[in-house]
Image (cartoon, rainbow, N blue to C red; front, side, top):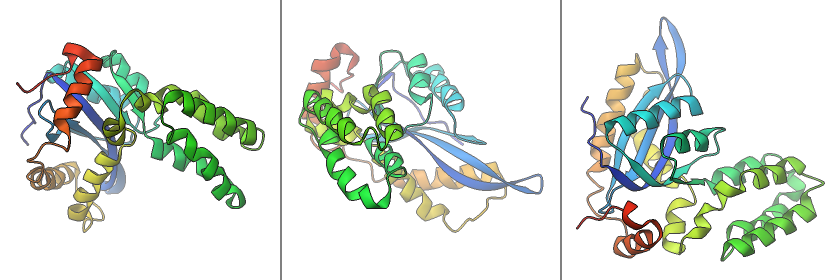
Length: 252
């Protein structure tokens, strides 16, 4: 399988994993397929890394990031991830200057697991001003109000928001067009949905190579549709250049 060429720096990356079943030694076992989806300096989307492991964890993500570094990726400006424990630390260990944005949607889903049905609608109404705020100051004010109202009833939920706030709130540093791109891992999940349209007929793969091959072939067809730069890329370039200086690669 051909290895994808990489650039020295990427403005934005989304890192997420899919999960499948394969046969191994007469048994059915789980496999995590780690995908690194990136936007390059020209605003084009591409899959720059795909790796297979027994399960998803920060330790293997560290291996993935180390491999990308060894292949020539020297900088990532913004990394969008889920809320996997230790994930942000793994990225920062290899790319210490990166801005890490944890997925707001994942955080909301995890929070709602702890909210009883009776209060779900009310809690969501109070939570929305936190992540929909105009700026960081407004968001932090709304988070304090959320804590004052719900902290005693749902301390685990509020503690999680406070503990992860530095990662959840990174997108407030940017204007709306960039916020929309990075506040969630939806771009990676959208890619996964397209891949699963191809792999859904395979309940269990005969081996790891069969899994890799089918995902690779699906990716080749998906990437054919990624022939245009993302919307408003020329404006986004300017904003990232102002914030990150020469770290922001340009295509001219």
